[in-house]
Image (cartoon, rainbow, N blue to C red; front, side, top):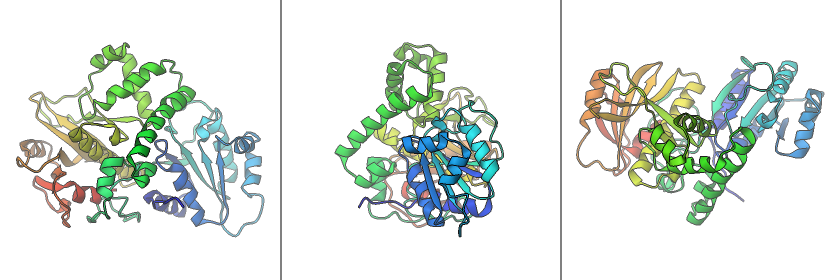
Length: 406
């Protein structure tokens, strides 16, 4: 029997349905666990239904209309518990917004609804009236070191540190955070999985859900971005390599972002003299595709931070964002997390604790008045101390800092 990992998003779904009537829109990368998480909602009710657009029998039920789906879900019968229905990958249906609006408006008092998708559910403008006010979005990420230790909701952003179980930290570094290769922990499986996943992303998802015809050039761009992780994005340089215009490269990168292949981190400029205000840095959702060790650990931290700011924002703690800082004197700090548009904590990532703490942490902390400044290193063992009790710049183990996030 295949191992299943408990996810914090199951707790999020339970909490949401206890407090809100709105639909859950659960988006995230292909194979990150959206279907598994949505199916785990079975534990909240005995009246559970699941419809997958990629299943032809399920598609027929949806195409027959709102009443057909209601009958399938048993909404025309008296039930002991309130039903839950999952619509998986329904955004591939050209009229999905119109369908969901009609279904929700008719049956919102009788059923709880989860909608999942492997591309952003807010990027498609086709399909009729707006769903505004009828759903809350949640962005599901791959596994993180914190989620492997803790799946209960704590009601606050920062948690106490927890030592990782067995070799979870090493497995994340080696296999990435997507559940299947993480669980199998097999290098041959990982190599085949990585190749197949990228082919599916470009040859299926991009082909079917975008109007881009130049899939060969997109594949080249995807390969180039694997070597650009953590670097400033030079669109004109990439354009020459791919044989496309800079504007086209910008558009294609936005498309790859919308399908969760990569993400950009923008520069923070407020209160930074002579700051860079244009070029973002690019990271991959799957850090295992980054070959160089220093870039890979930086990408891993970027992914953990992005998961945290998305989670905190989606759960209503406030508005959180991820940035980096760099000025024209080339002073730089890898990451800044902002809370409600104000600097909260700075992060510099290093493989080793040798060489002391970066002077740039203190310099930029003074300039922007961030509450915390951490140099996160990968050669220190776990220490059971709360990093966030410190306000001065401090070197901290990655295994401690990352378990305090999500």
